[in-house]
Each structure stands twice: as structure tokens, then as C-alpha cells.
Image 1 (cartoon, rainbow, N blue to C red):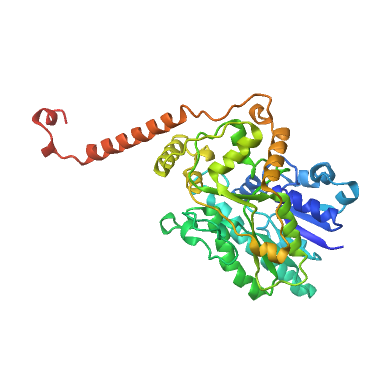
Image 2: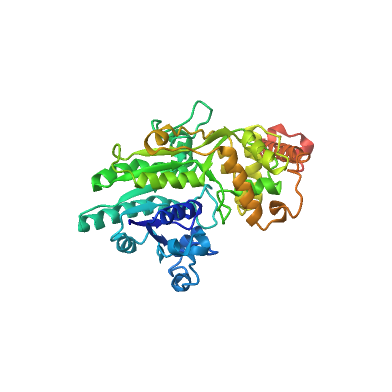
Length: 441
């Protein structure tokens, strides 16, 4: 049976991909900073290892067999769990990468840092995230190529890119898919500097632009998977399902004016597996956008409300109000609360409609009904989350809909008034003052 290396398998997608692979008889080797199921997050661990001279204090956990319990974390039978091994390391360690690529039949590269903020100073910074997401990916490519040259056969790489490379639009002009151009104009933006308007998606575009010619130069088979937002059961860190958690708490006071797209993580994992198992690639560097349901944010919240009984927010402020309020609150919180980051307001105001017809045609992709995904997501989150409003131990009727518009409108009016006062206070000259005013200057 084949042996696969998976980078970043401690996450949501990795959980389901490992399960599907070992249940089908494959052997899996996980390369990650933490054993799957550990409490420290991948992002914090990578930030610690990059920002300090010392490696993150994880070696004891990695060496302790009790710290890695594959049967318990992946919920598989003992015989399947015996085919899962864990190796501590990160994708910036080139020697480690080469060593772990020895003898594998394929590499699933999932590791990365999801960092949407442009300027939040708390680790991992946008610079660290860029280094991991871009340079780390090229490290994987080079390691596979070097090992393949020695072994006489280069392992196929299935890479987790993003639908945000092609399916990000300022207006709803049609879904983006594998025959669409990269949406650099929306994701990068000349005025936003090196890391773009949306740094995470800009990094994925950077990898695709530079990685595809690199793969051809190195003689690698790389399949570029572009999943949209993933929902479903099994997100034990509540990252991908964080929007559902916030909805259940009733902490979303308004509806952004943009769109959303999602698919079931189990279907996404199945397509990653199918891409690895293709006998021959249909063309060099094939891409597969994955989605299951395109909608507006308002329609998404209505779906959540339908299956939770929690009232959905109804107020949809103009974009300039939403962005101004988020920016003000973000600065007021000294950039400690990432949920107030204005980047999230910007992301909620664009559209993410996907076209997954290429995956249907070449991988046999048949996404399950989107409402099944929503129901299973809510059931899992309510069962496993500790917050009383989320798990249902404390009733939540919905967002504070009555006072939210008043608060935001008041904040924006105050901001405008402050700006006008600052402008005229700084720019008016002595000639505009009365004699009485001048005596007090």
C-alpha cells in the first residue's frame, strides 16, 4: 500500500484526509509542529520557532507516545491507527523535509498559516505567515524534487491552494473557476503594499504564479486544489467553523453586503485523495476549484437561523459605515481583537462564488447537499464547544439587533465630527478669527 506524507495534518482538512486515507489502507506520515489533537496551535508554534532563537518546546510532547493518540484523535480503528505516524518538524527546515520525503509515494501539502490581517502585530505576523505560506511551499517542492532525483521517481504533490485565487469579485459578475484569471486586482491592490489587500489569498496567488513554472522546471507533478470555505464536523479548534460559533453566540450584529461560498470538508478531503490517485494528470499543473453552494452572506445567515433557531442579524449597513466602525473599534482595541479587523469587513463585502465544474468533470466531484453540511456542522459545534450559548446550555435568541445600528451610527457620526474638527482646527488661520478669538489663541 502507498505511503503518503502530509504536512499540516493537525488541522480540519487534515483530520478528514488522514481518516479517509488510512481507512482505504494507505500508510500516512504526518509532519507537523504538534501532534494532532495537541492544545498548542500550529500558528503559535511556528511563530515561536521563527521569532526566537530556541525551538518551540514541543520535543517532549512529540516523543511521548501518550501525546500522539491517532485512534483517539482521528476516530479510527486500531488497525488503521497503526498506519499513522507522526514526525515533528516544520516546512522551513529543508533538511528535515528532505529526510521525511524519502520513500514516500506522494505528498499532501496542507501546512500554512491563515492570517487575514494586514497589520495586526500579534504573532504570527503577516511577515511570518507569508514566509511559511510561500517559502515553505517552495521548500516542499524542492525537497520532493531532490529526493526524487536520488530515488529515480518523484512523488506527486497535492497542494492546498484556495478558491480565493480565482473566485474573489467586487461585484457578483459570475463564479470564478479553473478557466478564470487570477483575481489579483481584488486580492492585491497596488495601494496595500507587498502583502496585498487580503494577505492570505495574495500569498496563495504568489505561490501559484511562481510555483507552477517552478514545478515544471523541477519536473514535478503538482495538483493545485482550490477549496472554498470548509464546513462540516470535526473542526476541533473551531477555526474554519468560527463563523458558526459567532452566530450561535449571537455576537454578529450586522450583515455584510457581500457573498459566501462553502463546501463540506469531507467532500474536499475526498477530492484531495482522488487527485493523488489519478493515473495520469490531464495536463501540467491542473487546478481544481472546489465548492458546493454559492450565496450571499444574508442567505448564509438565514441557513444558520433555519437550523439553529437563533435569530439572524438583519441590519446591513453601507460599506463605508461598516468599514469605518470596524477600523475605529480595531484601533480602539489596540489591535488585540482580530474579529474587529477592518480586513474582515472588506472580505465580507466582496463575493466568493465558485465554479467547480472542472472537478466534476475530471475528479468525479459530487458535493453533498449543502444543508446536510450546515446541519452536521451545527451539531458538531454544539456538542463540542464549551461556550454556554454555543452548546445550548444558555439560551441565545440572536444578535443585539435593536441597539447595534444606533451604536455604529453614533460611532461613525462621532468619527466624522472629530475629523472635521481636527481638519478645521489645524488649518484655519488667524485671519479667520475674530479679535475676541485671537486674544484666546
